[in-house]
Image (cartoon, rainbow, N blue to C red; front, side, top):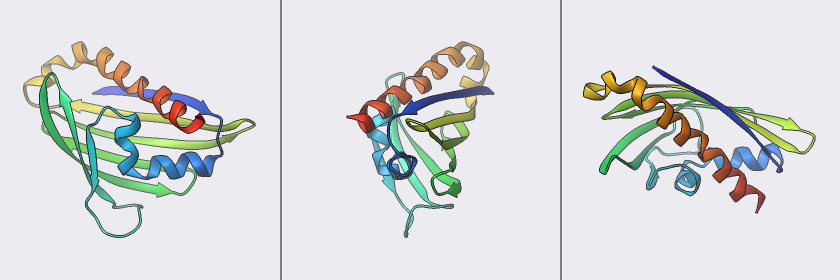
Length: 142
């Protein structure tokens, strides 16, 4: 298992940050995915399902995502299942004097032959995840 955690302060109100992050179709703008498609009907909330495409080491993959908890303006929990990993995590939204603190934590488990390489990949995966937060900040603050 690879544990990840980070946080970033964004100079925007919690409601604005939450609304942008909750819209899974915004993910390609700030996450390392090529496309995202919501596949369940209705408004975004607990149980919302989506698919995302990404490239890892030159190979294209598709992963299934589901929102496992949804507390407006407070928390979004999710689970991703891909051929090479599973990922469970939470995003927490807290008001600050200057906007919003977005905190993320999660656990990534590699699978198949990649499982034996978790310790090798852990620093690279953490860097990839940590690099997404500045992307989100830049989009929302511009």
